[in-house]
Length: 199
Image (cartoon, rainbow, N blue to C red; front, side, top):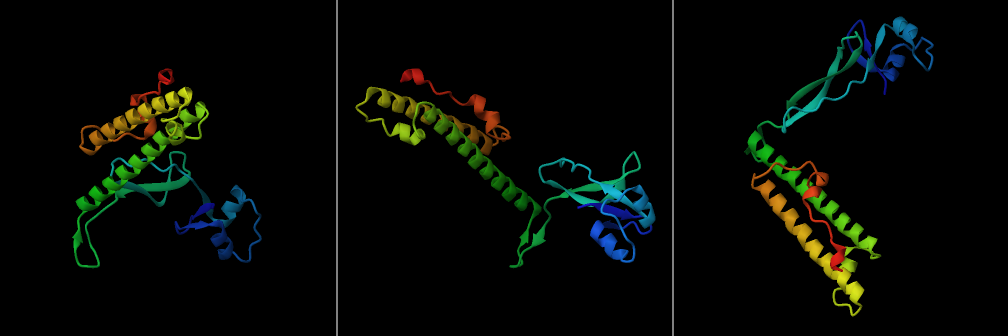
């Protein structure tokens, strides 16, 4: 939604609000510089939201400001995500406690995302051999058909290796031994690749 800064007051309003402020003025659908000058307003341009400088910081809109070219643009400000507060039971919840809970939640979300991606890759590998997914492939581990059984053995070995490596990596993250990865793509090169030649 388009925003405009009212020159006389510094207020920021959207187009609908400005139309309501000027009920007796016939305004076109598209507002050019001439329309803005008649109304005494300046368009507000969207400015990209900055990246927070810390793990427990957030960036929020904070009115408008002029850029180097004299245009009015979104202004942003950084603030702490958490602060001490007293809950309904009268217990003080500290900033540190909230940060710890936030970190734990983010780590759990990361784990779930990585595990889902790993499972998709296992299933994709199985589909390359004509199976619906990894579990269906492994279900042939007792098959009397030597090809199917070999595929199942290879997938079962691969699955165990993948999950063992994932648990090792995430265990290091949880213990503080390594930084949390940004996602599955970052750790994928560390994971084993299935060797169908075993089949």
